[in-house]
Image (cartoon, rainbow, N blue to C red; front, side):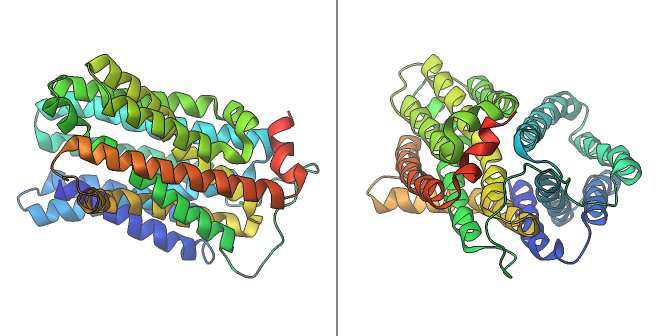
Length: 361
């Protein structure tokens, strides 16, 4: 548990620093650095795994590598694609990110049976990826010029506009609400006598698979919901939590995890879409990196905040059902805030800014 938390802290710290680094350094060397750091996080435990602090440090390095890659890849998409192509790339990025995580988890199981240390060999995949990036990732990162691209919000000297900070706050709220699923689903299922560890594993796998599939149809979601995309995601989160709270059998739980997968897919993708709407090209990198770091922050502090809020309203943080009730409240808050935010952006951004990308082919 501590090793996993170290990875989240590493991802948060580095993604937070990326907001400043992207204003001073080119993205290619930063991406290569992230791959090297991730490779070292897997290499060191293979050589020496006798001390827990060293494993914690390596977990931090692996997370730090992720902190480099996730925001930088997202920024590259925002800077080099526009319109429907950008929406498709945001969706595909979500698909490969969540799908890759699912694949690694599937591989980790049988590999772990040969010895838990061997799991760290999976991080060696960073080595061939490093050479692919070194050889094929272009040094010239100028955004593609497209005549019909909608103009961004008026430029400001601030690397992150105030709208970007609002978006960061909303990302934290969404992450806090979702944190009840990975933290409490297993306890809920076992406490209610609905299933065992295998059932929980199937449910969490459903979330990952569905979120990956959502990335493939993200442009369709955007076309329908536009700047209410995050509100639609929060609505799925509300429905997912209600299904779990009122579940009388494991199939009902699976319906909840399916809906949670829809939420998770939208939640992973929507920050990039909103950043592309509210920022200038010069602000893409710092703002998206900050949104990514806030997502990691929500994951890190989720257990603390959910426990605190559950005890605050008179529930018990030791009871999984109470935690899901707290999560429901957070999803409702997120939904209301996202509706208000989407309404504001729809009314204040130029009409073609809010609609043209979703309608053009």
